[in-house]
Length: 362
Image 1 (cartoon, rainbow, N blue to C red):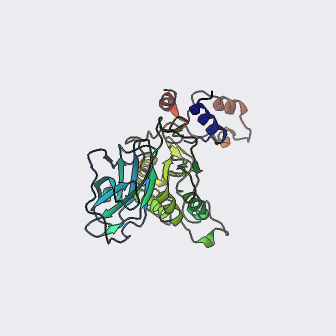
Image 2: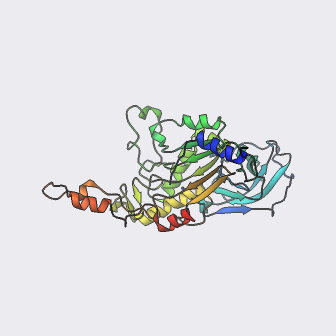
């Protein structure tokens, strides 16, 4: 007789596409467990959907929790109330608490809600009780546990989302799909100035020029770029409807990033380490992931008994500078094949590093 778990696992593998990519955390994630008891008081009756123009989002679902996110757009410090419930009318609030919106993290709020039921859909919202401003209602879910009966997992996989290069219609399509989670494999934003990569006579009429109107290098630059992307209505809708599991690639920093530099970073643009940390800070504010408070963003997710998803960094922690053919051409125009082959096959060159490899093998 066939074991149901074995059948489910084989069925999933047969009908799935395996994907791999290289994946991070808000330095100011607020945690929540059983300390915030169910409380139905102070429900936002008569409030207006305003003050939170970048919408809501959820990240890094597990079988016991999920991170919920918003940004208070009023431009001033405020105490914001959050609620999470099994029903969209919030008649029975599962968790409730307060968090502070502050200029220290660009008024973003990320709450790590823990000790909730596995394999369950949840609704959540944020509001300012003093000003009567409330977010749209977000939808998210927890992952199945090993004891939950799960026959399949539906993932939507996206990447390389260059704002001026076209419309984000695919995000709206995924929002209305039956995908359980969205896996974003990186290049959530692009760092280029208007008129650069991704723009041409066909895309220019779309009116999606990058903001700020320059290549982004500072913390304020990266923050403004994230706000622009999150202002896209299709991306907002997808974040509102589905939890994300994310990983960065190079353009969250600069084109062809490696551990100590990038192709699209020049000496005239300042110290690369400072630029990298500014990009990291903005990323952590707008894509708060459950990995700690440093650049070690690798982590894993278990979907019941049928899937383990390993998200890894292939850019920032240990990646050596990419080889360039130009480095192997001498003054006479001859290509040094011996040196190229030696470097290409060198065991000392790293992509993900020893520490991450040890974690992956443990």
